Image (cartoon, rainbow, N blue to C red; front, side, top):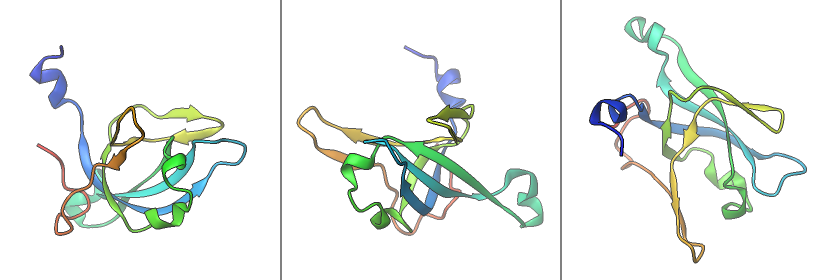
Length: 119
């Protein structure tokens, strides 16, 4: 169990996938370029975007990863960056899967703008 205060530290935000590509010599990894909305330091000026590279093990579910381009999904935005197979991952895409292989990305309604935070 974690406290409500600990949970409140997790920043979950709507992001839009700008590009997706398979990482060579891996079975599961995709490199995603993601727009997480206005860059926080520049948000008041209305300039800049929070663009991230996110490495995720979702490739088996997307043989044609180009179908991810333009898709809005939920991301954890405040994880410490981590190196995965030589690529820096700057967040985490949220998804669910079952033991029998069912899979779904967590996606907001179409009318929810990029950068909206879960609360």
